[in-house]
Length: 120
Length: 201
Image (cartoon, rainbow over all chains, first blue to last red; front, side, top):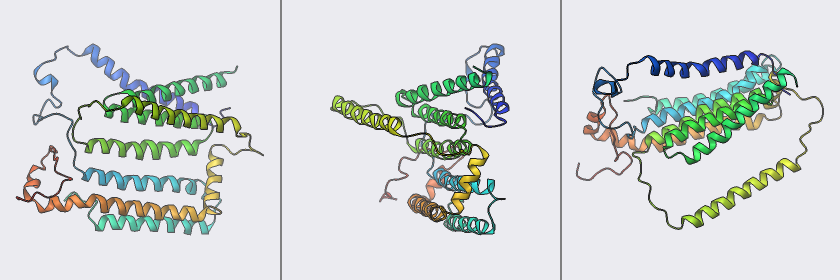
C-alpha cells in the first residue's frame, strides 16, 4: 500500500516532463523543412567544422573530475539522514558529522594539493 | 479497487516493464553508449519501485549513487575507451554460454529461494517515508557510528587511490610539450596516453 504524501504532484510532474522532449522532437519533425544536405547534417551549423567521428578517446583527466564527484556524491547520501533527523539528534551527532566532513575535507585538500582539480 | 490502488498497480506495471525491457536492452544492444544510458533508465525505474514501496530514502540514495555516480563512471569509462572494436569470433562460445547461463540460473535459484524462505512481516509498526529516514539517521549516529565514520575513511582512501592511479600519465603529458599543442578545443584521440613514454622523443 502506497502511503507517502505529496507524490501525486510528483507523478504529474514526471508525466509532463516526460512529454516535453517527445513533443519537442515530434513538432520539430512535423514543422521543420525536410532538407538533409549540406550544413543541415553538421553538428554545429556555425563555427568550426567538426573533424573526424564523434567516437574518440577522451582525455583521462575527465575521469579525475568524475571520481572526485563520486566521492562527494556518496558523502551526500550519508549526510542526508543526518540532516533529516537533525532536530532529534543532539550536539554529539553534530560533532560526529563534523568529524565525518573533516575527514573528507582532507580528501579534498589532497586532491587540491595534487592538482587533480586543475586542468593545467 | 480504488483509484489510488489502481494507479499504484499501473505505476508498478510500467516500472516493471521499464526494468525488464531496459535490462534486456543493456545486454543485447551493440552500442555500449546506448547500453549505459539504458542502464541509467533501469536504475531510475528501480528507484521508482523503491518509492512505490514507501522507501523514499532508499529511492533517493539509488538516484544519487547509482544514477548520479555509478552510471557517470560507466559513461566516463566508455568515453576513455578509444574506438569501436571489431567483434571477433570467440573460441568455444557455446561452452562459455552454457557456463554463464549456469551461473545466472544458479544466482536466480538462490534469489528465489531467499524470497520464498524469508519471513517478510516485520514486528511492530513500520516507519515509512520521512520517519524512516529519521530512524536511519538516529541509528547511524548512535549504534552504527563506527561504520559511519569508517565510511568517510574509506571514501578518503578511494579518493587518494584514484588520484595516485590517474596521476601517472599526467606527469608524462606535462613532460612532452608537443602533446599540449594537440589540446585544442577539440579533444584529439591520443592512443598513447596510457602507454610508456616513447624512447625517441
